[in-house]
Length: 124
Image (cartoon, rainbow, N blue to C red; front, side, top):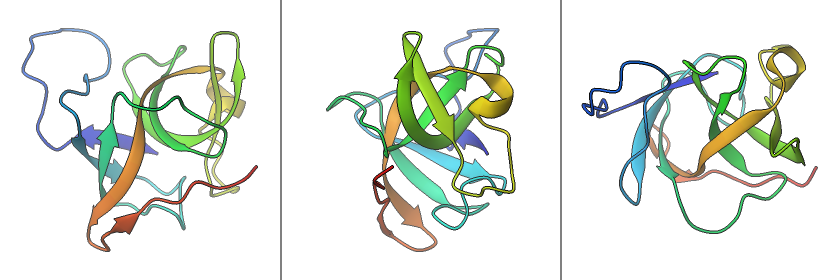
């Protein structure tokens, strides 16, 4: 599942995924891999800093093998200095099973549109 910043990064960085800025960054979710937790078209708030990531958190990350793609997935475990990520939709495999370890850019804290609410952490 890909995410796109609601306010695009205008920093002029030519390569790589957009950077997350500010204490909370709004991003738009695209794709089905996090259904039913998050759906295509959901707008969420991401905290780039704060408490350390824990297994079960929903995060925004960049796969090391796909540095141009910003994704939203669930953190499973730390591995090789990064995180192993999985989507909540078991039928879609565009996660660490296909792309390997990812570097987390931030933690998804809330969905603000269309169904406002906290994004639940899930025990794994």
